[in-house]
Image (cartoon, rainbow over the protein chains, first blue to last red):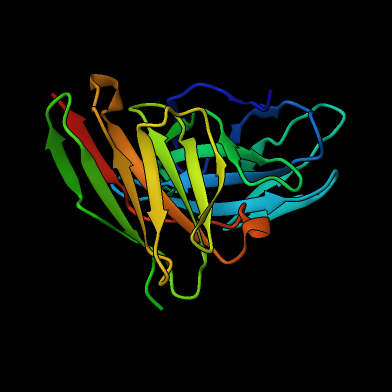
Length: 112
Length: 114
């Protein structure tokens, strides 16, 4: 079935460090891929998305590239800030589907 | 433009009771999806409503039911509550079912079943 696997956290970084969160997905169909972010006490917010192979989504300094050959959609940011501390969720949407499937989430803690 | 709102914020119920959670979708959005997020896990899709009709359902038993009203607000009802139903319940709205990925989430309702 459809599934998304993320690296487990927590990930603890210093400010200005490079962040990578790994995400892989099952290759059934031609899914769209997403990263959502959940700040403490808030709901999920869409961070970025990619709808087909080789697409790159980007927003707020974060980037992720849809890699069909490795079924991956890793999230990266070159220089994190304390305000990036949150839980990040990778998700997939089956083509012509109506259900988002989420990974388990990765908690990121950025220390000053 | 108001965002997605949910009520109540927190709720404590006893096993076997019934609960109703409410969601007001973002202005102009006609699709509402409900998710259950257990502590430390990713959200799990419960079901979706599109123009007042159920439009897909996840792997949840029939005691989880829902409604969508003409103004596109929605309710999630859970009967015969079990301890494992304790979770954060998220509502998300979007404009059309085909753009479901671009969903706007509410802050959630934290349900505790004792």
